[in-house]
Image 1 (cartoon, rainbow, N blue to C red):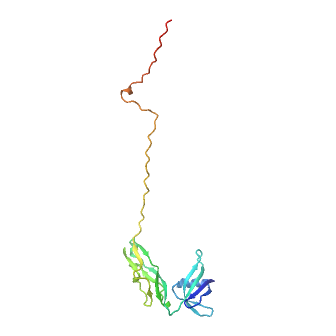
Image 2 (cartoon, rainbow, N blue to C red; image 1 turned 180 degrees about the vertical axis):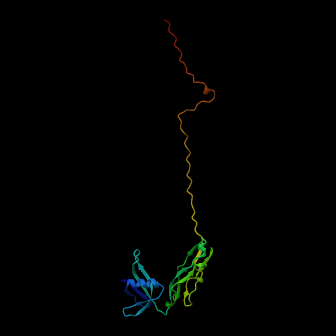
Image 3 (spheres, rainbow, N blue to C red; image 1 turned 90 degrees about the horizontal axis):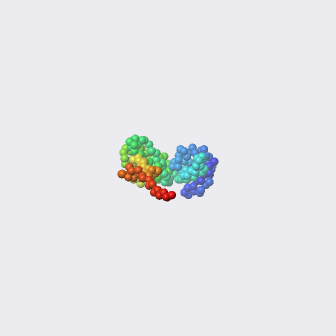
Length: 207
């Protein structure tokens, strides 16, 4: 069983428990914007919207839920998901389709809320093409609260990756090679052999 909180305008908050399997089946089909009916112990039907669901981040197991009790004769504000369809010709041409908006805020009677807004990407042909909120077609009973000029999807260029060249490696000047040979004199001096000085002979002493 999953703990649940029932709340709404003009009603007292109630702590409930619902079957996890039953809840998951309904939530997958209805989402958070479609009216569903909660059956109480007496068999009565309570119209609600699933307003919040907490899941375990790893197992995705449902931990708790909040039910917003509504009145079928009173308009409510909610968000309707955007469903993108088709393939944009601009994408085939190498451009990028940016999906900007994924939900549209509306005001409507609970039973008139659309399940989704379908947006055909096939209209995006070239650079600069965009689809705006004003392009949506909603039933007359549904008021779209988002500004008409709000962009839902647009075409842009691919981001080019700039290759940064590594900085040049500074060359260290080579040190002069050390040699054991000494510099030789040039010119005539180089051809003349070095003369050795002969020490003066001592005079022979007379006997």
